[in-house]
Amino acid sequence: MSYLVNLLASGLAVGAVYGLIAMSFAIIYKSTGLLNFAQGEMAMITAYVAWSISTSVDGNPFIVAAGSILFAIVFALAVERIAIRPMMNEPILSQIMVTIGLSVIFRSLVILVWDGLPHGMGIPAGDALVTLGDVRVRVAQIGVILFLFAAIVAMWAFFRYSRFGVAMRAVASDDGTAQLMGVNSGKVQMAAWGAAAVLSGVAGVLFAIGAELSPSLYALGLKAFPATILGGLDAIIGSAVGGLVVGITENLVGGYLSSGLKEVAGFVIIILILMIRPYGLFGEKRIERL
Amino acid sequence: MPDTAAQIAATLLELRNVQIVYDNAVEAVRDVSLSVPEGSVVALLGSNGAGKSTLLKAVTGSLHREEGEIEKGTIHYGGRDIGHARTEDIVRAGLILVPEGRRLFANLTVDENLTMGAHLKDTARMKFQRDAVFDLFPKLKDRRHQISGYLSGGEQQMVAVGRALMAEPRLLALDEPSLGLAPLIIDGIYDTIARMRRELNMTILLVEQNATQAMEIADYVYIMENGRVVLDGPAEKTRSNLDVQEYYLGFSGGGEHRKSFRDIKHYKRRKRWLS
Ligand SMILES: Nc1ncnc2c1ncn2[C@@H]1O[C@H](COP(=O)(O)OP(=O)(O)OP(=O)(O)O)[C@@H](O)[C@H]1O
Ligand SMILES: [Mg+2]
Image (cartoon, rainbow over the protein chains, first blue to last red):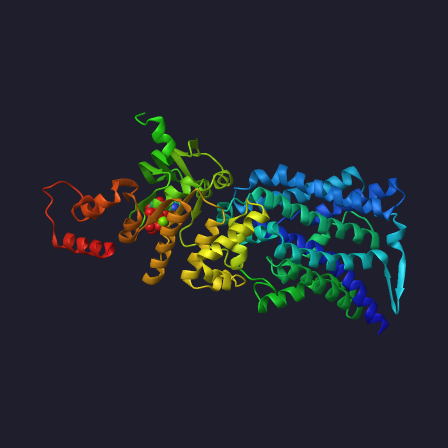
């Protein structure tokens, strides 16, 4: 029983990481029709920057949190302005190619600026083990689960109650008409990239604290993207659920069947679900712009 | 330029010799000049593909979204050249379009659609305008929390017009507001247009295929065919002229052209379309 609960808890934690990055994919897709295949790499770079900050402030968690969130936003806005904005009126496929190109560049950048070795983040407050009944988890794992739920609530309220959030939904529904209302689609795109960077950046940092920092961190994006498809490409909260499903499935399969199957388990679930629900668990419209 | 300064001041929207192409190939509008005096209702009529919507896209700065381009000519609004202005700035200046086919944000509620109409206004102003729209369309107030995509066609058109009014238009352009609606609903829409003009002193550019009703409300009429203005004049005159205007009725060529049976049938078809 305790074995199962521990598997579920760590599945929930890694699922929350996938979920946050999956939400990032969905936020950008929903408001601009673009798939940012560099999302995982951007999360990885944020984690490396967090590490650099951590080593210079002796792992003070507050400074690391503030610094990495700030970096994630500035970095995303720079990428948006330099690489994505000029492509805004180009075919969506060319824009996706740009993000794939960026992902390769970012991966090399990590090796170039930092190194190729695994590291601990050096943040004792996040590393610490907590025992809750039968379950032993790290503070960072609890943190990422709480952050996911906070993000879900925040996104839900933002898109429902804030005027800018409503405008982003309007752009998602019909961007040409939204422009006729005076909506500036550049601003919408900036907001989407900024929000996505915060969610996936925090996910990357917390994952690195709970596990380790390494140049393979970008692969979180590869796990999160199918989770987005699972939840529904245009369903932001659905994507979070998709991430949790993938994370928990992986852990259960890895724990009870075989660790070799662990990596593919999530994908198998996704394929099965998509055969029944082609637009994902919570998707509402056709994927036309891909 | 023949215009005096006073005339320019009184003209809110002025198109001069405008030529528009799509994809560098399709000539959709050729050499169109048109002016909308402040406080007037101008109707722009014509059948399918005449180029009416294309003109409205040009006026709202949204041609580039469809690979369209103003090749020649100028568009002035409130004395300002808006031929290359961004839609956002045109909207801010009060030129608001109710697009063809309503184009509501289907999965947003009525309230949210209206809010979008006032996107460039602060929240206090938005709420004030929303109350004004609910006064004009009390039915929308009852439906305010419903998803707009599930409303009836007539209700959707009310939302589309209401959404445009949220922006406090100085010039309201309507692209075929009667499209696909039942006669009774159309009457309602036209009553509203008449009221907006009377009570809000709004300048209106009305694009229609439904010529009769549009002409009743308009001060001045332009008729387009194949990308050109083929006839224009005060609404009164044009109305009485209509039946004898051969080229408007689709006949080409000079006087020696004999009307065949097919032409007459064609004529009747057009007549019905006018009534
Ligand atoms: N995006 C586009 N790309 C290429 N050609 C276009 C495009 N939009 C319109 N056209 C062409 O331009 C011409 C004018 O079209 P427009 O939509 O302006 O006509 P309209 O007068 O509004 O007709 P309707 O009454 O049917 O709405 C048509 O020949 C049409 O095929
Ligand atoms: Mg049209």
